Image (cartoon, rainbow, N blue to C red; front, side, top):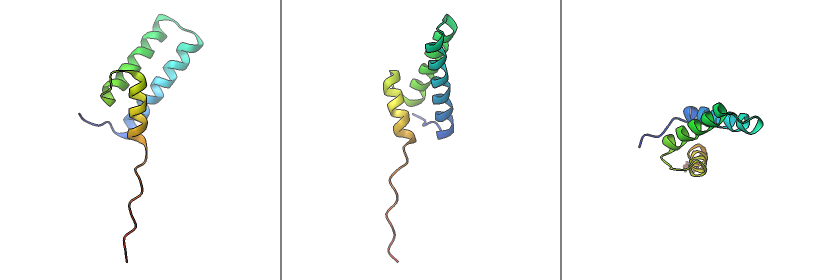
Length: 73
């Protein structure tokens, strides 16, 4: 599986969040479809089958890695 770039992943998360907010504020067929489409995109990008898992995987992929050990001088 190809890993998405952090920028692409952040953009997809932002689109999903916007779609969820819009759907929660005033749900229409269009907002439901946009929410489902953005959820699907995140699932594909993370290789996970459900949105909760995809969000968790996206968080893990964006989490900064532990700092490298200091080198002895």
